[in-house]
Structures are given as C-alpha cells and as structure tokens.
Amino acid sequence: MQTTRQTSQTSQRLDAGALNRVSECIYEIPKSFRADMRVPVRIFADEEHLQAILRDQSIPQLTNVATLPGVWSAALGMPDMHEGYGFPVGGVAATALPDGVISPGGIGFDINCGVRLLASPWTRDKIAADLPKIVHELSRSVPVGYGRPGKLSLTMAELERVLAEGVPYIVREHGQGLPEDLQFIESGGGLAAADPAKVSDRAKQRGLEQLGTLGGGNHFIEVQVVETIFDKEAAGALGLFQDQITVLVHSGSRGLGHQVCTDYVRAMDDAGRRYGIELPDRQLACAPFSSPEGKRYFAAMCAAANFGWCNRQVLAHKVRQVFGRFMGGSPAELRLIYDVGHNNAKVERYGSRDVLVHRKGAIRAFGPSNPELPPAYRRVGQPVFIPGSMGTSSFVLVGTDESANLSFGSTCHGAGRAKSRSAAKREATGQQVRKELESRGIIVKCPSNAELAEEAPFAYKDVERVVDIVHRAGIAKRVVQLRPLGVLKG
Image (cartoon, rainbow, N blue to C red; front, side):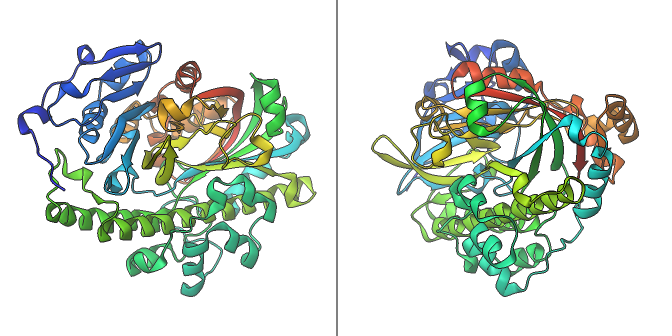
C-alpha cells in the first residue's frame, strides 16, 4: 500500500471560507481542498458554533484524517469537536476493510472511556435529606484520582479473564452487578476479538489494581434529577420520569488502556514506514487493519475496551451499594439504562461495505431498526448520553435510523472543551469553583483543587447548544434533561 504526501498542501490555511454549508447543521470541506485528501470533511455545527471550533486546530486535524489510506465516505466532526492527539476529540472516520488502516490516534489513550446511566425509583424529595450523606459516602467508597488503587483485588489470571471476557466474567465470577445488566451494555460488555496476549506486561501491571477506580480529569460520578422531559414516549420506554433521581458514571480503562495506546502508537509508527504509508501528521500513525500489526493492536484495543466496561460495572456496583445503605432495597433498585463507550473502533456494516468505524470522543447513536439494540429500546432507539460539566445539565437522547447515513450511527459524547486545562486554572481556583457550585446547591467532592479548577464549567462549550445541533441535524433526538445535585470528581 502506497500513499503520497503533498507537503505544501498540509499547511494550507483553513478558515470559514473553506467550508460549504450543505444543510442547516452540516458544513463540508470538499476533498479538492487538498491534493492528498481522499474524502471530504463534514462537521456538525451551526454558524456560531463553527466559529468556536475554528479557534483551535481540530478542523486541520480532521482534514489530515481525510488522507488516511482506505478512509471511506467522509471524515466527520461532531459538534463537541476540539483538538486532540492525531484525530480531534469528537472525530469519526470509517476505513474500508480489509485493507483500510487502523489508527490508535483515532481511538485515543483512554480506550473505551464511556458513560453509563443508572435510574432510581426515587424522586428528589425522597432522597433530599440523605443526599449529602450519599455523596459523602460515594467519595469514601470510590477511589478517585490518578494513583489510587481499587478495592477489588485481582490475580493476574483473573485480570486476563477480565481482558478476554469483559463484563460477563466480572458479573458471573465476582458478583459485580446483575446478569440483566448485560443486555444494556454496548456489545454486551465484551468484545470477542480481545486477546490478553497482545496486551503488554506493563499495561497489565498498570491495570491490575485499578478496576473500580474513577481516575482523574473529567471522570465523574454525578447524582442528578430529571428536570425536563422533551419526549414522553421515549422517556417512558427508557423508564425515566419527572423529578426522578439518576446517577451518571463516566470513566474508562485507566492506566491499562493508556499503556495499550502508548505501546501501539510506537509500533504503528514503525509499521507505517514498512507499508509505505506517508502521513501529514505522525500522530496518525497507522497500519492496514489486515496486517499483523493492525490485528495485534485491534486485539489489544478490544481487551482494553473490556477492561473499561468492567471498570464502570464495578463502579456502578459501588454506587448501588451506597444507595442501598441509605435507601434500602435491592441493587436492582438502581436500574442500568445503558452503557456506551466513546473511545473505540468497531467493525460495522453500512450498505454492502464492512468498515472499521473509529470513534474518538464520539459514541454510537443507533436507531430503532438496528439489531444490536436491546429489545426494550427497538421502538425508540439507542439511549445516548451527552454530559455537561459539573455545573450544567446533562442530556439523554435516543439515536435515529437517519444517523446511519449521516454519521455512521454516531454522535458527540459531551459538550467539548472550550478552554485548555491550563487556561481554566488561570481564570479560577478550585476553591472558587467549589464555592460557586455549592452556592447553586450542587454538592462537590473532589480531593484536588487543581483538578477542580481544570474542570470548571466555563472551560466547556454550551452543552445545550451542542445538544440542539445534534437534535436538529437528526442524528439523535432529545428525551430528557438532567440537572446535577451532587458530583464526585477524580
């Protein structure tokens, strides 16, 4: 496989004039914009939101993605898009199989980071008196931060089964959660292509004590209340009602996934040269999916994805235990609505073509007709979660059948950063952020003021505007709005 690089083209200046508005919420850069582009770039945004996206290098990064060998149809940018490693965060691209490439930069370092939503039978009034104690107990029960070990001790043999089998193993053999959870986890919480032998010893050592840990950065557990219902039928199908208490869990594959990405970025850089692949950005290091290097990375990525689902499963089990201490009842009282990952690559079929869909900071948004959905959701579509920041609402949506043609069945995974972590810390201290949130009735538990400042609400784009673009574009439909009551940050 041979590609050519047009060096003079990769540095071509990009501004709003290079984008054509093709619909209300879709802009396009034609593949004629650069000689090395194989497909056009499409960005989901409105005019005002596009100006925010243009402030960083995310669109130039996406045009680089459009040069990848085997890239198919279009390189896509979600409305939360911002600059990342190789691919922008919020970038989606499919490569045609078997010889299209797989790129670790199109998946990310926190492999299968994702979000799951738990729904309770209680209203806000029912738990109001106990809410401060519940949030405090969550902070005591869930290890947070970058270096804290988990409380579920595994042997190396048990870790390898986690990597190979995913959530079915951790439920069956370790009692973490309920068997009925499995149907409400993307891919059943386990990818069959996983091979622990393709995960380095260093990655395994990093993951050995991290199952059931939240981590740092933008990872969180948030207690919320259903504030607004936009679609009563879909809300009913998902089991959501007005003033209901819900819990959103956001974490990933921790140090294990990070190490898998680190290991294979280096390996892919060498492999690309052997296959004659030239790229406008070394961060897009890749190899043909059918190559030995591509197969090894995919097997390791799937293993890390299984670890990520298991991590959220153990975290959800802790959440259920904490609520049980105060509210009584069985673990089933907190019902799993769905769990969806936003840093992975999946083999999927569109029309007559098998493709590998890279979703980096983007999630599936499958419509009602997709056979992968649980039977309970085939009337309304797959649940989609778009969290805000600590002080803003999160949203539940459902995917549409139209998303398959518009976005490879994908949508965004959050509001997206508007300011870097360092810029956020220059504008406010963690103590100021904590005080402001508490003044709005939001209980905050975070062991680090520096981390809290980095995740200040003003550092993120307007989540309501992002959700509005997603809704108007037709890739997912609004169902309910969730308002934060208590937040546990890493």
